[in-house]
Length: 219
Length: 192
Image (cartoon, rainbow over all chains, first blue to last red; front, side, top):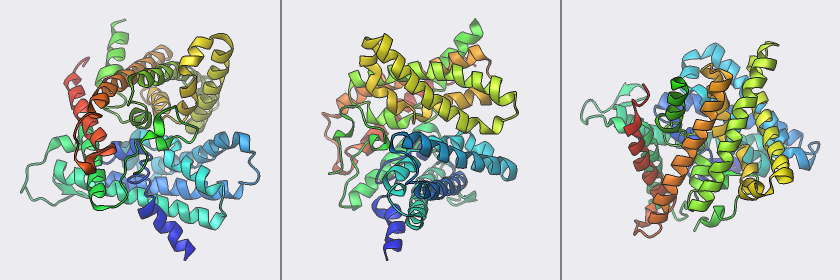
């Protein structure tokens, strides 16, 4: 029961993208097409699960003072593995995602989960938490990307879904469209849920925030 | 000389890190609600980005390429940046206290700022020379500042607006960012 709860926690209650507003950079940058999102989602989930497991195993060995650099090194190691695998087997996806694959290293979601969950729980639950968070991240990005790809290009996973019924609005797949889509999706979720997302960004930094950062907390 | 100016302008305006490439969004949303903090934060980013571009390029050319370890660049860069930020903090604290006072609190969170690592990776990807890397890093930092300062103004206005309940907070900030980003499209084509 607790196992199931750990997984669904990442998908709904603490959805990293839509509820905690972490890892906004890839959310905005690669949601231009749903295919990209799948690649990014699998890569990030792999890194999340593996780094959560290793950090959980080493949680008693890593001295408290150097834990953040240690976490970053572990995460960077797995990101490099993903990078090399992608280059070798999926060169086209690698080109489409570009520098956002190595930038998974600084994706706040992974560091935050290491700090808040993996460093306090055993391997089994840490792995489940990684899966849950990874799924939550992928689903949220898929939602935003569907919104952008259908409106901006008339396609979904490359299939023509609008059949020319509406003119594609180019702006949705350009950078401003990323901001519009993300903002609108969060607003729609706010409309239909009790807990409002008010936070802006800085829940992101695990290393202490400048002064008035976290003033706007969930209502 | 012309080449360097073009590179600088394109890093600041055409390829604006925040509004065009979505790098460094977290601090952009987190600390842009007051003009003074926006300037402090972006000052620290310019500073670290310029130095980090220089050192990551050096490490890549002198260590990684020489020993055929290019695939380790992600790990190497993040460690170089983390060490550099610590080092800069210590140096500033010891030798230039006023600057430390202004930038100090923003320095630690810059390590996990994807703009710094992003600049380092772009420099390598585009095979910039050492000088061009530093110019690009500096330009990207200035671009970050331009976006932060512009947006801080927009957000100070937003505070006094009557916004629909479900759009309050993050959503309206995003919509405003989209409008600023559309403005930056005007620079497309500048500098070829």
